[in-house]
Image 1 (cartoon, rainbow, N blue to C red):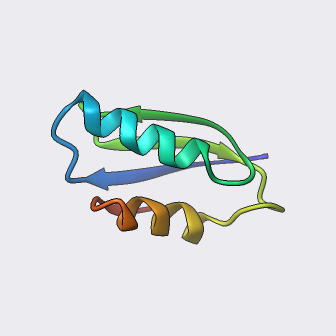
Image 2: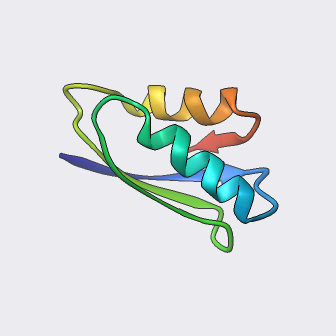
Length: 69
């Protein structure tokens, strides 16, 4: 398992936090996703044999937020 912290710009409320958390948890290989509005961070634990950091970032970007590592 790997863990990555992804900066997430554009979140404005707890609904945004839920959206980002849910979209990350739907990705293959994601075990946990802890998203913080206050810190604008997503702390994601994932199986690197099933997904890549680029896929995590792309999913966040596709939802209308801006992700960076």
